[in-house]
Image (cartoon, rainbow, N blue to C red; front, side, top):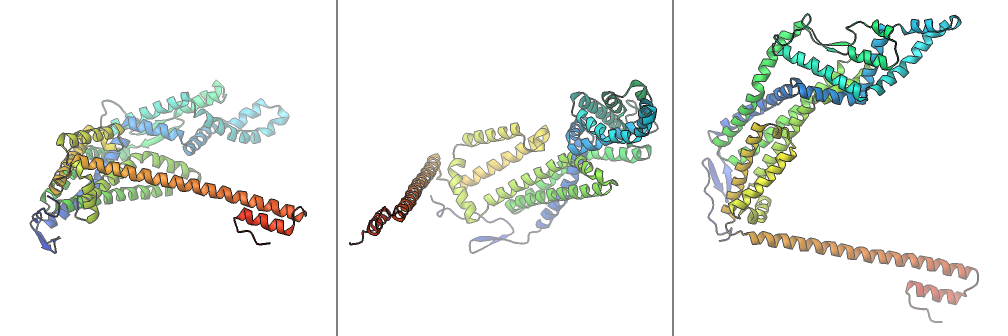
Length: 467
């Protein structure tokens, strides 16, 4: 039976037929479907934001990994080097120390010398920040500070206590170690107070609100994604035209992803605008971009999901191009079910190993992707069997063989033309050289006019002029 001999598929409720093409009518459930997708889109944005907070801001391992990446950023290194040297100069009177070390008649040079040493000291600190010893200390300091912060935000005061309700990033050990490596004496280092280099992360008046926000985030970070998926699934289930609803879901994910990228961009501009010193704008930008990298990954993952859903819906649609593509793929999808599912399982296994999207890093989201993937494969397989029941595996082999032969023929023709053009180019170059040689001989009088004319005609392949 050919495709033209197949009976027309029954129309779904709420549709009419006009010239053989289905036209969507107003169905009472259509409004519910659109409303469910709209709510799911808003919740998808919120779910991505809460997931970013949970996995980036509240996860100590991810925090430390991001801080290590920050230390490798040139702008952050420069700002941190300047900060550490400023702390050292603020706690140690370098000018006075130089004045004591210089002869009495040269004490006036202590001020300029102290100022001149500031830039080399900053560069030296930058070099030291690249060493493993300093980087390990930086990781330990950030891990300790973040564990304290998370314990406070989770209201786990049995584990940790704060001084006056203040959580700080303590860089004092880092300042002292760098001072030692810069050659400062132990007497000078003893003058540095214990709280030098402390950066306040959170204060007591901010902790109560932050604790409530963390509790809400931890509750919503998982359940919001479950609700989003449930709303999308319910919209597809209630839909009269499920293919179009799946396409709408794809556009919804694309829209939510674009919103996330716009929010990240606007947040970056806001953070940079809050920096008072223009010299710190570059490191602030680097800090924000690294800290929000996971949010960008979630947004681009949504773009990937949306593109796949829209492309899948278009592939399953009634357009001529889609039908032509399905006809070519029918021999592959119309084979034995075990062959289709074995191929699909291998493809999904490779995706899990590759892990191109954040969802593959969590077991429950991987299972959800597996379920959606399996549903799509089975739906496409059944559609192919229904539309092209006579398709066989041998037809796919003929298509592949014919395509390969056509491609090889095209390559052979191109190579032959390339050789011909190269030969023609070589001949043209030789003709030019010969003509230049003949003109030189004729100019010296070695060839008469008749001899020159005859030789030139011979080079150009022209008939000889009668004498």
